[in-house]
Length: 418
Ligand SMILES: [Zn+2]
Image (cartoon, rainbow, N blue to C red; front, top):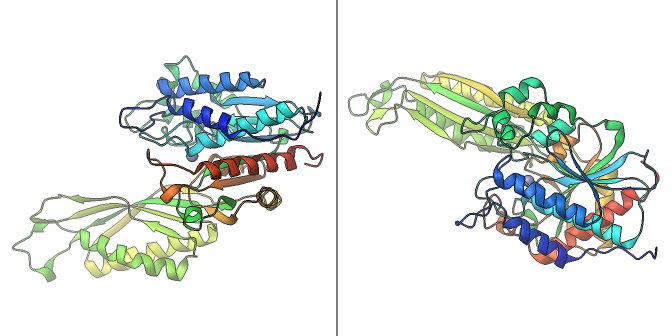
C-alpha cells in the first residue's frame, strides 16, 4: 500500500455534521437528541453506519456506547481511546460533543486512507447520556466501572421516566451496563475534542484551547426558615424574613471567592423558591441552589467551609434557621501533563493560535480520568454560546481543531511507548 501523509477533509466532516444535525431537529431549529429517545437511537445507528463506511470495525457495549476500532500493529498494546458524545440537551445546537465524535471519525478516516498503521489500536467512542438525562454520565461511568445495580435501578429522568423503561423501549437491557467496564490496562490514554462552551477563546481570537484541568463542583440546596407574616402590619425590626437571608448571602459571594477562592472559582445561585410566595406576605421560607466550582479540591473544601460559616452568621443575625443538603460533589481532574504537552505541540505544528486553559464544564474525560491519563482540546464557541441553537464555531477553527486532534493522535498512537 502506498503511504501518504494523512490529512483531514473539512468537506467530509462538514457533510457528517450536517447529516447528523438533521436527526432530532425540531421546528424551533433546536436539536432534541436526548439520551435513549428515538432520535438518539437513530443518531447512534447513523454514526455506526458512517464508521462502517469508513472501513472501521464497530461494536456496542452494554451501556449502548458506540465504538469504532482502527486496528494497530500490536493488538496487545493498550489502545488510544478518543471520543465524546452525540446525545444532546433539549433544544441544543449541532456541535457540543457531536463535533468531538465526528472529528474523531474524520481523523480515523484520514489515517485509514493514508495506509499508515498505528502502533496501537485507536478506538473512537460515542458515550451514552453525557448530558445526564438520567442524572449521571451513564456511558463513561459504565466504561470506567462506576455504575452499580443501585444506580441503574434508581436512575430516573426529570419527567419521572425510569432508565430501565427508556432503554427497554429499544430492546436494551440496562443491567448489561454493568458489563461495559473496561480493563484499565487495555487503555493507554483518552483524548477528547469539545467546543469550549464559554467565551474565553473567541474573546481572545484564539483557535485552540489546550486544556490543563477540568473544574470540580459542588451543588447544595440551602434553606432559610423564618416566619411568614403580613407585609403591612409587621414592623421591619420585628420580621424574620427568609428572603433577606438569601439577599445577604448573595452579597457575601464576591467576598467569599476573594478570600477563599482562586481566579478559577465560580459561585452561582441559579434558583430561589420563596414560601408562601405571595406579594403581600413576608416570606417564611427560602430555598435556593448554590453551585460552586474550582479546579482545586482543597479550594473547594475551603469555599464550602466558609459558605457554611457565612450561612450560620446570617441566620443568627436575621433570627432565621439555616440548613443545607449536598446534592453533588464532583472532584476536579487534571489533564495528563505529557498529553497536554502533546496537544500543545500539535497546536504549534498546525500553526494555530492557542492558549492553555481550564474547562469550566464537565465532560466524559472527567469520568474516564479515573482509569487512564486524559487530554482535551477545545475549539472556540462564538459569543460563548452553547446548549442553544445559536451554538457555533467558525469553520477555520473546526478545521484547526481537527488538525490538532490528528497531530495529537499521531503523537500517541504512532509511538511504541505508552
Ligand atoms: Zn458535551
